[in-house]
Image (cartoon, rainbow, N blue to C red; front, side, top):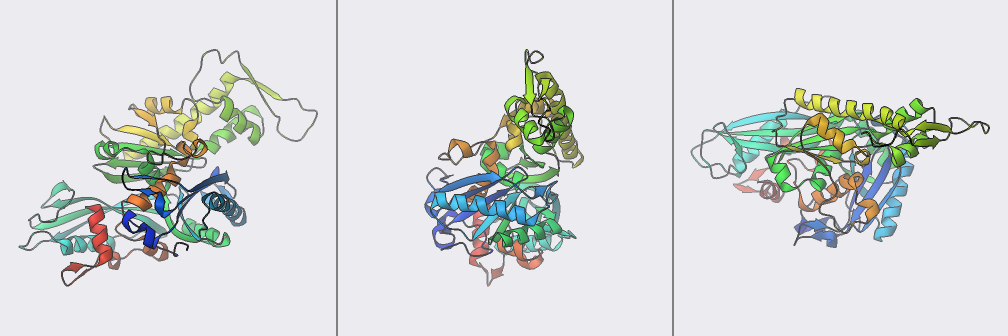
Length: 441
């Protein structure tokens, strides 16, 4: 039995009855990865997951933060899903896509409702959510995440669960993460060509955070930077809530292109040099070490390109440093408060380049560590590195949340309206609303 089209994320207690299989598809410029989780993959005792099938293939048809060739992208998606299905021994008909394409950004909305003489109840929370949703006006953009940041009672902020509190007003800050509507339409059509249902879209830095960050980091403050092939994106956390999303259409493939241009070699040769010998920081004795790379073009008489290893660093370091500095400045301009003690966690394939962590320490002037999927202990070595945090994060979110204020089914089908808020009927919450409030407060 396959996942029904458009089904929202489910909690672990109902996974077996509503979602026999959960499939995560990581669509990037460098690779397409697919992770499949069966119902018995949710391990309640230690809040981990077991991935039944995992695969990854070279990405095609994705460039510059968008899908540029539908057929090639659909073919790569199909290959990744088929390989994961064979490993898992279970077919899937739909996937939740995690990606950084579509110029992803976040937007805050606030709402305030008056309270009566009674303590704050579920109906008051539902009214506040509905008022906040009514304020979401994002022309030509598609909301993909709708998450509460914080509640307040009479202006006192930082309230996690306002129910049973008394006051004159109830406030809510809501974070909406969105992508370009055109990119969403292209993604949806691409999945159709691959004969798969699009069950949800998750921003890569959001789900990478769920896989790589510790609970203390989310609570005390942390920035998760997802460094992919075609983009570099960041998720800012604090007080156990997602506070901001930032994204740049610059990634590891841009470093490869710089090497190819700077050393007059092919892209394949540049990628090999970067992977085997590349570094964003100087290393001892690298001036004496010479490297070979194939020449550009098909001239059989042309000899290999021979350059000192130090030259490779002079090409790589400026691009990586510029990318990190641009991201740092954008976060500052967004007004996202980062406590001095807040750390950074790097995920994504490009974060594995030697020297990137040390360069990030220098640029951001704070502790930096390399992130890996924390709660998927049975992943094979080939699928357990920083490049696979986003795929693992999709499965962790499906198993343990957080569940969002608007279901994936509604987000995939249309724009958000006030009618999407949890509903109250005769003083009792409908099941879906009750589940959301229980899991998020």
